[in-house]
Length: 193
Image (cartoon, rainbow, N blue to C red):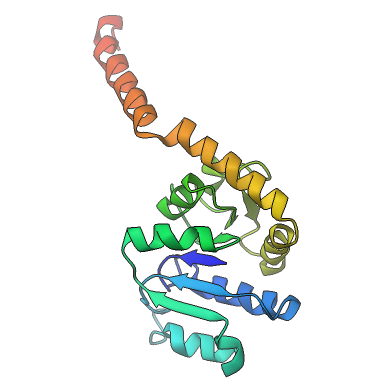
């Protein structure tokens, strides 16, 4: 499994580790590659808790060997990592239009994401990925297990995700839509708007 994002509350770095903790109970052979900077989990009342400390609270030393924390990587390196993962995880507590999801989808990677913010606008549940209840870790785990146990479904979702991104988010598509907005605006004063 692959996670690309900061280790902080907003991106859900703590959530992905909590999900992985539960998944290891179901399959101790699972592996997680965690890519992103360690910003730490913090609040106004407590000092920051960083990746190493947080993961040590959840995992035994033997279990921690199933997690490869690589820190921040250049895009090219992430691009090369994605095909190695059976599932890409997006656990953000809030997103508009997350690049990490779009990039994974463009590469045809099966994705399980928290249904937050604009995530449901780019991931069509059970067509281009799986959306999980952001307040229910068990639901997220079930969605991941569904893909791990059904590689043909994972492949199908990844293929459909790639088609979706090509059709809706390609440079050509974005340029055409942007030009349409400008054309409409230019015509608007003629109609008295």
